[in-house]
Amino acid sequence: MTKRFKTALTWSVGLLALIWGLFLIDLLTGGRMAFWYGLHTREIAGLKGIVAAPLIHGGWTHLISNSFPFLTLTGLLIFFYPRLWPRVLLMLWLGTGLLVWTMGRPVTHIGASGVVYALAAFLGFSGFFRRDLRAIVVSLLVLFYYGSMVVGVLPGQEGISWESHLLGLVMGAGAAYGFRGELEDHEIEAKNKRAARDAEVVEEEVFLDPDTFQATKQEKAERDFWDKIREAAGRNDASANDRFR
Figure 1 (tube, helix red, strand yellow):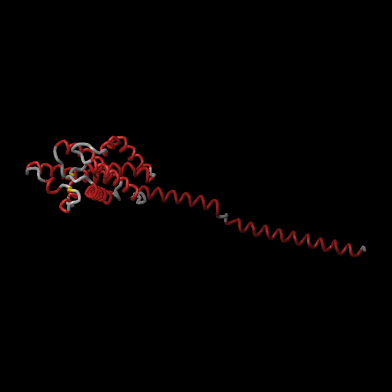
Figure 2 (tube, one colour):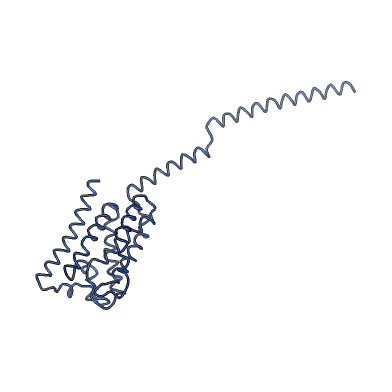
């Protein structure tokens, strides 16, 4: 538990520190990162934005509004999905960027909000797809704290990449469904315990007690004995009848 917490804290804070560091560098060097590394839709030059755009922000308000949800949702993903999180985070990051590059408006998209929406959707939907108590609790927490984010997918909001929000939501839900069968350690343990209990029930219901076969042999021997007695008695009765005719 402590190791998982340290891992979650290290990676989530580290990624957020990278975002803040790049923002400060961009601020001090004239603010050209969005031009060079932003996600320019359907342009070859914009492909690098699939990786870089979530690290770039256009101002303090933009940066701060994304920082807390990015930190908490990344931390939740890493803590509660220790086996899956590297693949999930990579898929959400690149998948959301690729969808925006393919289907977004012909503008420059920057900011971590698309990844934030993807993380929230993955955590929110995973509990329902996996049917694991721990995942369900995380889902309910995410829906409670970040459910209002859904308004961000509506088009027509000035200065907001609503496509990143919407497509991040789609990507997160798709990833939750796609990874539903890849279990964490506690899920594997619970599954094995259920299988063991089911096997015990089946054994009790289906398989006969070893003494049953011995009892069956004894019953057959007893039936054969009495059949012979009745058969002998029947022959004696028939002989007696023959003598008195």
